[in-house]
Structures are given as structure tokens and as C-alpha cells.
Image 1 (cartoon, rainbow, N blue to C red):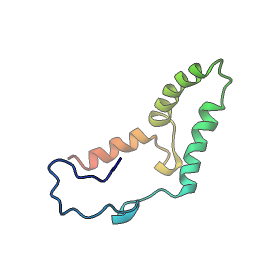
Image 2: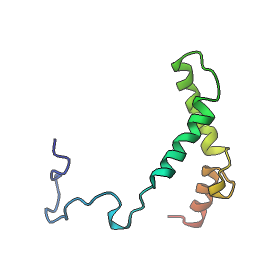
Image 3: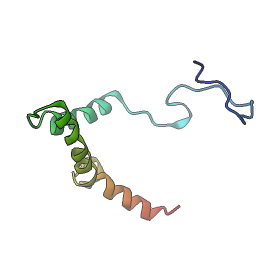
Image 4: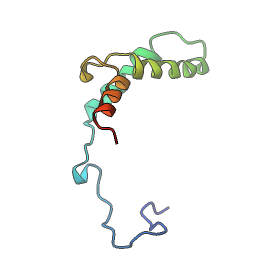
Length: 94
């Protein structure tokens, strides 16, 4: 499958695909990604003994709501991500 094939309406003069991180886009450093993965594993997956995989999966939704709406993040000035997002939205109303 060619993922770079032309799409309908493509101008044709488009530049070739660039590697990830090109064009000034930020790419997460591997240690940051690893740290992000460790947090839910520690706080959700390994925090309790779940009876079944289905029960653990069900608990994931609750954890993600907590993580985004209530859990304070040091990188965000001890605010949850949704509070930080709301503050940014007020600063730049598009």
C-alpha cells in the first residue's frame, strides 16, 4: 500500500514527505515518552488487583478522566491538563 499516493484534488507539485520532526515540529524525546507510559502503568494498571482484564480495561476510562481533569501535573504548574487547556483557550479565542 502506497501511503504517499496522490489524493483526489492534490495539486501535484507538493513537496516529498519529510521525516518526523522536520519543518519545526516538535518530536517527543524517548525518555519523555517512557516516563509518560510509566505513569499510567504505576497509577492505574498496577495500582490494584483487578479480577479480570475486562475490569482493568473498564477502570482505564475512570483513570483517564482523573488523569486529565483532576490529577495535578508538575509540568503544568500543578494544574490538571484540562484546566491548563481551558486557560489557554481563554487566552487565544479562535
